[in-house]
Image 1 (cartoon, rainbow, N blue to C red):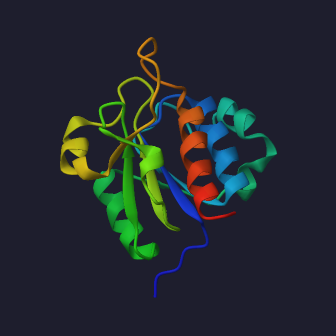
Image 2 (cartoon, rainbow, N blue to C red; image 1 turned 90 degrees about the vertical axis):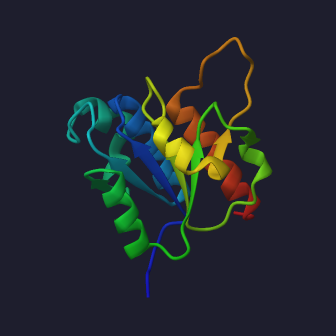
Length: 159
């Protein structure tokens, strides 16, 4: 039987900014989510900015780094019961608050500069979600986006 001790899973696809990854790791510790990092990264895991943003919470973080998307899918299916992937992009038609989230859901976010690859979005169009925002901005900060969405999922589950 597959086991997972995490409520949710946050996937960062090729993260670029260590401070965002550190802040997201800190949020994952606070909510009980596992953090998955899909290579390549634009920084070293031991980057001082990464650790500074995560403060002293990094030792409590359940995290795993994988080599690429196919390796992530393999590891998730080996370790997570009934995983559902949700892909966050401003190109989606559905808002994140229109979904009934479940334990073990995976929240997938792209790079800070370009988002998720179009090929990945095309393959998973029905599972793409957006955070509604005014047209004056291109996007929210990655760590803010993660916080908004996983805390909504946690709220839905009554935690």
